[in-house]
Length: 244
Image (cartoon, rainbow, N blue to C red; front, side):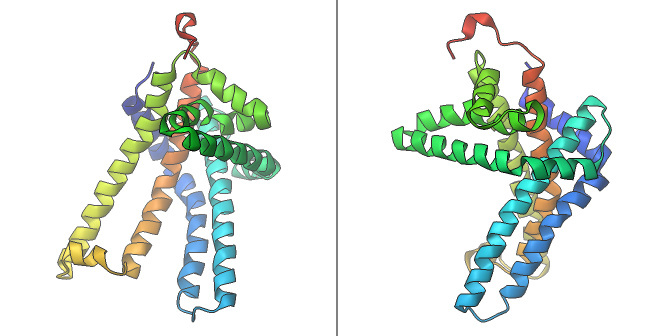
């Protein structure tokens, strides 16, 4: 089976080819961030707190929406299909309820695994992480989507775990190293000690830098799991190891 490193390289190649469109759509996430910056300038009143809570919900909804559209785009690109953001957005609109339903089921299962101990939670995350893709690309709903995700990992649990966890961990590590390096360089140019810089209230420029970095990173976190799904659906689980 393909390795996480190979899939990351493949994802970067996809990203490089489609970067302007992917980043342009991901940039919508800067809208709620800008709203948060504006309300942070206001006195902390109950009304402001309610607005902040509503903004959090809007941001969460927007993240899910944008991620789904980017997954449709990545899937179409991988298969050489037509890429139409308008069509993907329209399709996403019809799938938000099924996706949110599956997400709620996932959270309930993961919480149950956490109560049992961390090992069951880890197993459940590997089994059911691909449920979104069963909704998006197979037309499945609810428990049927969870079952489809479980079927994709059956017989190759550890390979699936390496793909599902290894790639995102490597990407997050790369993101953390690059962002820390940039912050350190800017801080050094301003004569600021990095430890002091991060120990108190985080400056606005770091929050802006982080928000921009997340805009750049989100397409990769949409492309990579899409590539994992494609890799798993294109291979057959070995019959001898179905106990996993």
